[in-house]
Amino acid sequence: MTLMFKPAFLAATLGLTGAAFADSDASFAQMTPLLEGLKSIGEPEIMSGAIAACYLGTGNRAMLEEMMALDDWEVYEPYDGVLAYTPFVAPNLIVTVYADGELCDVENTALTITQMQDAVIAAFDKAGVFVELQEEDTGCYVALVEDWHDGTLVGRINSNGQDPVCFSDVPGASIRFEAFR
Image (tube, rainbow, N blue to C red):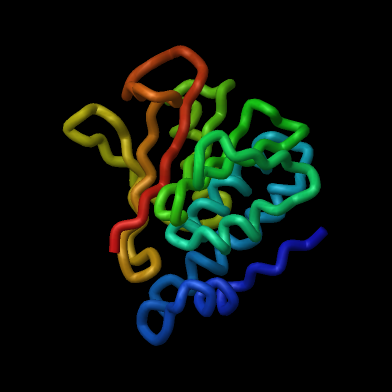
């Protein structure tokens, strides 16, 4: 199955026009092919696809739901208004879309925080999109992508769960994308 999310479609869906589209067009075009990984059986490709889906769709729940509506993924609603997606071939990976789509979380229960940082960098590097990891005052790392949908996309990397921590060698890490416009 080929996923057909071209930059122009994504821009139209998100309401991007003019300069906002021109600024994001290159990174959209570069990240879109990674969505093919969502249909893969290889975990690195699935992980890259999940990161790309959150990158491309954070802020637009309908588009995230469309990208994640795949036969090889289980979807469930752990809380009211929250959707979680897990690929059958990689049950340790969970993509969670919150309420209006302003938050999109990629969690991997088998990766440590350092390994999650490496996976994030690998996904963006594979697409040729520059991402900068910066350490916050809290000690957590954030992945920053500027000029994203006429704003900044922030992906916080930490442990998964209700009380995330910034440092841990225990498997269970996530990146939570949040849109700031």
